[in-house]
Amino acid sequence: MLFKVLERHPDLASRMRALGAGLLVHGRLSDADRELVIARVTARSGCAYEWGVHMTTYAETAGLTPRQVALTATGEPGDPAWSVRQAALLRAVDELHDTAHVSDAAWSGLREQLDEPEVLVLAGWYRTIAYVANGARIEPEAWALALPGTDRPGA
Image (cartoon, rainbow, N blue to C red):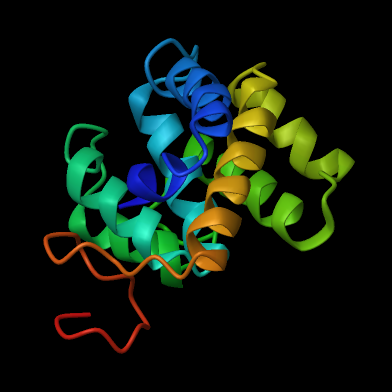
């Protein structure tokens, strides 16, 4: 449905598609890191549409357990379900979401795990996608996993 909404503006859709494909298909982050960042950004943004699509389509391939999938929406970075690397990614995403900054401590933790500024671009991109999906009031796909905490049946 997101693509249908964007196709109302073909020039904009074309420009957005290039960055989106670059991050999803040609990005330097592992599938696991990429999907964890996407899940956390979209969950924190309340974007049930994009969270559900990604968690249904990519979570298993990215190695996220069902518990971890739920925790992307309801958990904290310090939960024992997360590895040190995953916790560092979640802390950085949470700080970006809350303050549009990453503290020295969070940045240091992130750098110990990976030196990849693509995390910042990816988080910002999916915040943009969340704005579009939420702003256009795109309903979650019927086949997609429900974002925990929503009133959708099966959530």
